[in-house]
Each structure stands twice: as C-alpha cells, then as structure tokens.
Amino acid sequence: MKPAGLVVGAGIAGIQAALDLADKGFTVYLVEKNPSIGGRVAQLSKTFPDMKCAACTLTPKMIEADKHRNIRLLTYSEIKDVRQEGKAFKVKILRKPRYVDESKCTGCGVCAQHCPVEVANDFDERVGVRNAIYIPFSNAVPQVYVVDREHCLKCELCQNVCTNKAVDLQQRPQTIEVDVGAIIVATGYNPFDPRKNEEYGFGKCDNVITGLVLERLLAKSGPTGGHVLRLSDGRIPQKVAFIQCVGLKGKEAGNLYCSKVCCMYATKLAGLLKEQIPSADVTIYYPDSLFDGDGFEEFYEKAKNEFDVKYQKAQVNEIVEKPSHNLLLRVKNLEPNENVEDEADMVILSTGMVPATSGDFGGILSLKTGVGSFLEAADPSKDSVTTNIEGVFLAGAAESPKDIERSVNQAHAAAAKASAILEKLEKTNTLPVKSSQ
Amino acid sequence: MEQPRLEQKEFEPTILAFCCNWCSYAGADLAGTSRFEYPTNVRIIRVMCSGRLDPTFILSAFRWGADGVLITGCHPGDCHYVQGNYMMERRFAFLKEAMDQLGIEPERLRLEWISAGEGEKFAALIRDTTQKIKQLGPNPLKTA
Image (cartoon, rainbow over the protein chains, first blue to last red):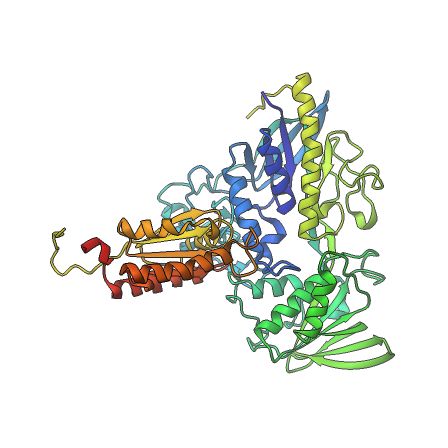
C-alpha cells in the first residue's frame, strides 16, 4: 500500500500540490482551517496579466480536489500536533465542529433561509452579509453549511427545518490522527491590516477600501453584482486614488519587504475600474514600483496608455474625510519633490501580504522564518521548498509573497519533492500505513 | 410519424447545452449553487473545451430530436487551451450555414461566452434560449 501525504492549507498552492500527489497515486489529507477550500484566489475577480476570470482557474481545481479518489478533504480543521516516528509523521488534526453533519448536508440552503441572524460576510471583506448558518461563498467546496456559534442565537430554527437532520448544534470537536510520510505547508498569506496605519483612516472612512474589497465589488458573484460603488452612499466613484505599499517598505507600522503583487494588482484593478467607469479619473500613488514578470511591464504600459491610468511617484502621508465623504489626500510628490493636496471620492489601499501562520504547528513541526516572518527554506540559495525538517516542504505565499502563477509552480515543485520521499518510503516499506480513524 | 397530441399542452423544448469544463460549466455550477432559477428544458453535457465539439455532434443532436443546441465557452482570450473557443466560433459560422441548407432554423443553435463567475448570466441565457426555442416550435426534423 502506498504511503500518504499531508497538505496544510487548501488555497491554490495547497490544492495544486494535493492534486499532483494524488495523481501519483498517494493518499493525500488536505487540511483547511476555513469551512471551504479555495483560499484567497476565490475572492479575486480577475487575474493578471491575462485578465482571465480567477474562478475559471480555481473552481475546476476545487471540484477536482473534492472528487479525487485519493484526496481526503478535511475542511474546518487544524493541525494540533506533529510527532516524528522513524521517517514518518504522526499528525493530530482537530476537526472543529461545523454543527452540521457533512455526510447528511446536501447544501440545499433551507436552514440559511430561516436563520434570523445577519452578520458581515468575511468572504466579501465584510461588505455583504451572511446568516449565522452559512456557506462562505456560493461555489464553496464542500457544499456543506456551517454554524457560526459566536453569532448564533441558539434558536434551533435551522435544526428544525432541516429535512435531512443534518444540523446538530450539540456537535463536539473531534481529533483524528493520521500517519503521513511527507508534509507540504501551504498556509498562504493575509492582507496587511491597514487599521495599523491610522493616517489612512481605513475602518473609519467608508470610502477608503482595500484592494480585496474592490476585488469583491468587481466580482460578478460579489455583494454588488460586479458594480463598483462608494460604500458611503452607493454613488459611482469618479475620482479614484490607489495608494501603494500600504504597511510595507519603511513605514513605521509595517514591514520592510516588497509584496511583489501590489503594483500588478493595483494596475489590474485600475484597468477594470476604467473599463467599467470610463469617465473615472484613476491615479496610482506609488513610492516604489516593481513589475517583474512575463508581460507585466507591457501590462503597465497598456494601463497607462490605453486605459489612461495615471501614475504618480509619491508618498501619501494622510487621508482626511470631508463632510461629503470625499477624501482629502496629503501627498508628498517624489518626482518633482513637493507637497500637494488632492481630492478623491474613493481611495483604494494596496495592502501588502503578511504570513497567515507563525510556522509553529505544534510538536516537531516548527518551521524557520525569514524576511517578514514568512516561512523560510533550509537553504534558500538552493531551493525555496525544502525545509530544515526532512519530509516537510513549503509552497505558495506562505514561503514569500508571490503571485498565483508562481504559487502554483512552487506547489508543483513541493509536490515533486514530496512524492520522491513518499516513493522512497514505499520502496523501503518503512511506513506504518494504516491510519487510525 | 404522427405523434399523439395532448390537449393544449404548451410545447416544452428539449435543449442540449455543451459547456466547457473551465469556464462555462463552472458558471452553470455557480448558477446552481447561487440558486438562480431557470427552466428545466436544458440538458448539460460537459466537454473539456468548446473546441472539442465536432460539428457532427451538433448535427447529430438535431437529427436525434434536440429542439435547440446551446454551446458555451470561455470568453475570447480566456480559453484554457488558448484558442479552442476561436475554433468553435469558426465552426459555428459553418454550422449556421449548413443548418440553413438542411432546413433547420439556424436560430436553434446558439454560441455564448460564459465565465466561471457568471452564474446569473448563465441562468439568464437559459431562460432566454428556452423562450426563443419555444417561439420557434419543435425541431422540424422530428415531424418530417
């Protein structure tokens, strides 16, 4: 029998790594802490530089991972403890209670129709709302509802209306243990929290939003049906400012590394904005820029010349909200060097990436971190996937900020490395293969 | 062949939809999971790419009694296989002409681009297509 692998994090990198290993015939446990797989890419409207719809790349992969005979999806689960046993690992996985039986829920949604609670939807970056019993987004995988006990009124309406008796508000957390020969860590990133840069007023001014909020506004399946509106009054914005390097590069609140994707995603979003609102005046204020990929420079030229997006090398020092909810920008232009004031009716903060985990998963799985606390390979000068623990590999934005293409490539690399280890274990037959569940 | 007629029953067409795996099938999926309503007249067949469709598939569908055929693919420039949807577009022009000569209304065949994010557009397309085929009536090959 073939040994199994473990993939931590089911974003695009984790899904890809799991698919690669599963296609080679290895059993893969794909662990995701959220109720659905998909990760950050699921939130995006389009991808750069080809401007393809992000869902067209991701959704078929999510479904493939769900249907793959060798992949065991463990959503809403977390790694609790990892112990080494010979050349293999014993992994304890906590299955958080969904309060809905995965084997019984058909995803019909009747429970959510009856739920009296409405709370901000994190998947829509808190622009839209969801119920206390919910599915994170409509094409979530698996199509199984989950109860948010923090906001649940315990009215038990959902439990009563479910014809399949899938809702079980008494469900308890469960711990399972699996034996694996290799682990791929693909825990991804979080966007930098712009509340830490108080001068930008995010969270206080309705019309200061982040790039991810704009992604949700532009998404056809998003809370506004794909229309960009000001959150203060629902008007169509006419003067839009993007602020680059938020939380990064020399700001006191932030970090000292480049997130590598913000220049491109801001350019992409600016282009999509101009496509939707041709009369809008869009300016990107950037203290520094980076376009290092195939077709990136051409993409930037196209945005500048064809879509008439303005680029201004500047540092924005402060944003002040006016009574009209318009925003006054105090800008320090860098070329030429001067202080100016500008007005915008919508500001988009291009927030950088910060790692989603500390690298400590419990037990022996404690990984080295490097620049910006991202996970670091044992010897980054040799390869970026092999860690200091034999049999553990890195993939995706958990290792360093990177775009989708590079995340997927790194996932292929990590899966190739992991499958080499698993094949060796299979030949020497050193792994106790039966897992206890 | 004379078919037994039920009294005053509205004609319910059978429409065959070929959806590509990458964009439009995922779009159809999204329409379902988002709970958009559309008529039940459509039978979906998933193909890896709209470019996979041999013109004979479509002609066979009409020969075997489909009242309409809908082909959906990725938006121009979005094709997972780079140019499959462009190939389909060229076959589509040919097919329209062939159908005209065979005596099948070319309007029974439709080609549209649906992305994985356009669940609502998919549902609207099915509603619209069903409506149009209803107006056209049954496939003439069925009664010939």
